[in-house]
Amino acid sequence: MSTRELTYVKAFNEGMHQIMAEDPDVFLIGEDVAGYGGVFHMFDGLLDTYGQKRVKDTPIAEQAIIGLGVGAAARGLRPVCDLMFMDFIGVAMDQIFNQAAKMKYMFGGAVSVPLTITTAGGAGMSAAAQHSQSLEAWLAHIPGLKVALPATPYDAKGLIVGAIRDDNPTIVVLQKKMLGVKGPVPEELYAIPFGEAHVAREGTDTTIVAIARMVPEALKAAEMLASDGISVEVIDPRTVQPLDTDTIVASVKKTNRALIVHEAVEFGGIGAEISSQIQEEAFDYLDAPVARLAAPFAPVPYAPILENAYVPDAARIEQAVRRLLERK
Picture 1 (tube, helix red, strand yellow):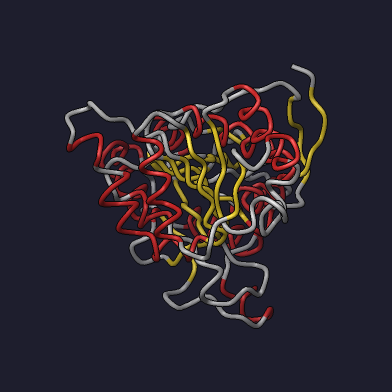
Picture 2 (cartoon, helix red, strand yellow):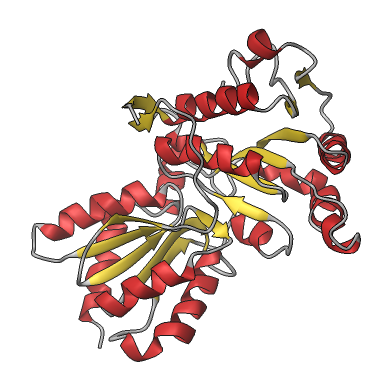
């Protein structure tokens, strides 16, 4: 594959263009997705290329957006429904967890729901408590849904293509703070399968399992630690449902220590589930208890100085690894 550098949002946009060119059953609906190209311009150019029949703005009615998507998917189309901010999922939650997630099961497999929901999550833009949440643990708890959190431009393109091709309802959560981050992205159309983690950095002394924007922060921390001879392995799950437990466990069996990092609140977060699976599958290999680093149990602050204190960063990850290595 020929590769060049694209920003995170441009890589996602290219994936949308290419999958819509490949499959005429794919269409896009949401608030401001057509004329404006989406709140973060991740859908730029789609209206001009594919027309109003396949790219349509909707009223501010999240439940109606997902309801339309569920019905269209059940009838054989592949809708992409954008909900702008992850926080708005709550408005459409009945359609998501009672309809989209359950329909295939309740009809004995006779009906598939190849629905893709796109949204933007995470803090870092002073968007305040109602526009900055990370709710992946909530969604991953629902049988029937698949949940992806791309951490690189390469993954932003590959995961949206994989999601749209999937015959099950999928949710792709873009990270607002990463939209301008650049990275290598192949020009050709490609899909990343759900449930396949990426070993972002190999190491021997401890494993960091990092979610979404915490992946580049963990990589920075690993570089800082390497200057003192500490070798850190960084695992990016890519998807939290399904979760690639095998790759995580294999890493922990090698390093004998694990730290899980995410920007969602720590209590009830996806880190607790990952920690539990490590304990169940690799307990005899652990030289110290599994550690977690996440946000405090509070709404996301608006003020930049408080928001920066709220979300884990490379410096705090480095400190957490050092504390973990001191434990026996």
